[in-house]
Length: 216
Image (cartoon, rainbow, N blue to C red):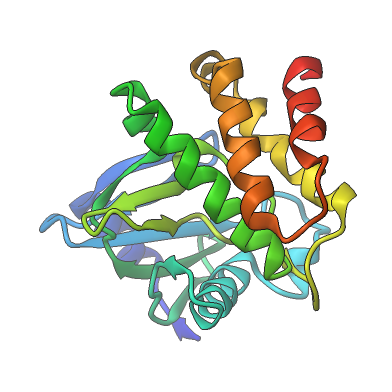
């Protein structure tokens, strides 16, 4: 893991465009040439599982595992550590595409929810539980394929997910009020039907997925 000084990190931040930030500071930066994303990770609690395995390392490892399984995702380089500011830094080439949220705002409803149903089924069949599953974390690339971003928070199981885990993993799609407003009942049903078709599971999942929408 490469060490980076406070001055070096502050200089990098000053040169970049801040794409995302929180109360603690910048989280995602875009380089001045628009070609590279710099993602910053900071442990927010003193006692955390990140003491054992930093979020930056999980991020890089998860991206590697996803690519091994055949999913499109970022290709991260090494990890840098700024002890003075308590940040880990991961840099990777910008993935050129638009989020499913953006496509949904353009009223491309059938395409969005067909692709969403397909990729979530593929994840679940491969034992991937994507905790940060939402419309902003799936990009449609120029090839029209989907890519996963913000992949630090996920779990990998040895076999396909159980039905209960599958259903639980749909909930983040409805957690954001703005996304919940965008998603209509007919969209959710289409996604459920596509998901069931590709899930490899017995019938009945569509109705269970629909029930999530009604009770969320």
